[in-house]
Length: 241
Ligand SMILES: NC(=O)c1ccc[n+]([C@@H]2O[C@H](COP(=O)([O-])OP(=O)(O)OC[C@H]3O[C@@H](n4cnc5c(N)ncnc54)[C@H](OP(=O)(O)O)[C@@H]3O)[C@@H](O)[C@H]2O)c1
Figure 1 (tube, rainbow, N blue to C red):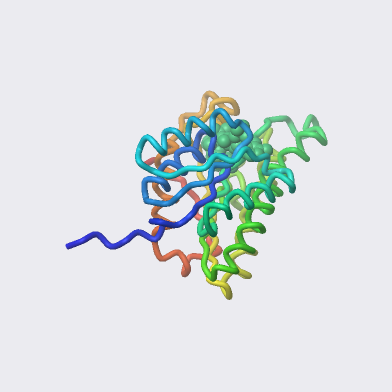
Figure 2: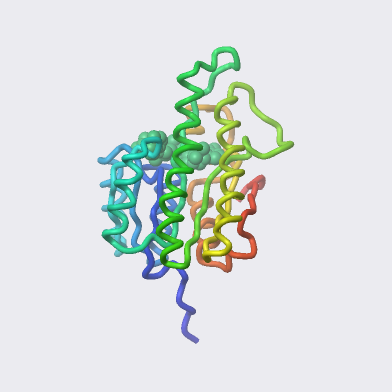
């Protein structure tokens, strides 16, 4: 019997944080599922390398150098995406983590962390939502963290990061609530420790239970699956893969 056509096949997906780590793995997995991926992050050389890997594997990718904390960059990203087609999927994986004890959390650390992790996700969701509403369909996956999940143990030194991730979970609920009428679903995933540069810099002693590919595979399964009934949910990833 023929395999059923995947939802992602032939659609356009925007992935932020696509220059490395979870975002890069997710972009490659989404491209393998047949979508054209628009790759957003600041490091254009790293984006070009990811795009080359996607194309070498037979997929389609468009790198778009973007600082997600900047309104004008996000506007440019979605103009570039629109040139390739209506964005049907968005994955917000761009994030920063600058550890600092609470009283040494400078205004710069606080503002930059919220600007990238929370405002960046908001700006991308808002731009994608407008395009998805016109198309009458869309699927969004935001990446928060166990650091943003109520009643999970927190690590010291992560005030700004933790607060930004609580915000991303709330943002996802808000997008889901307004998206329902327009065929737009939004879901949040909140990993524990994943083996990436961010984790290695922030906490070299922590043994990651997940690799970027594990998270990427879950995101593709969510995007390819019947997402609507779960829209607004946050999925904490506690377990080892
Ligand atoms: N690793 C973990 O244990 C873990 C656990 C829970 C949640 N997460 C979350 O998962 C997401 C991906 O993190 P990761 O672990 O893959 O970290 P990573 O390897 O450090 O990757 C972070 C990505 O975000 C991009 N980025 C940073 N600032 C940006 C900006 N201003 N504009 C656009 N892109 C920006 C980086 O690209 P450029 O530097 O090229 O801009 C990079 O592609 C983050 O939201 C993180 O908070 C990670």
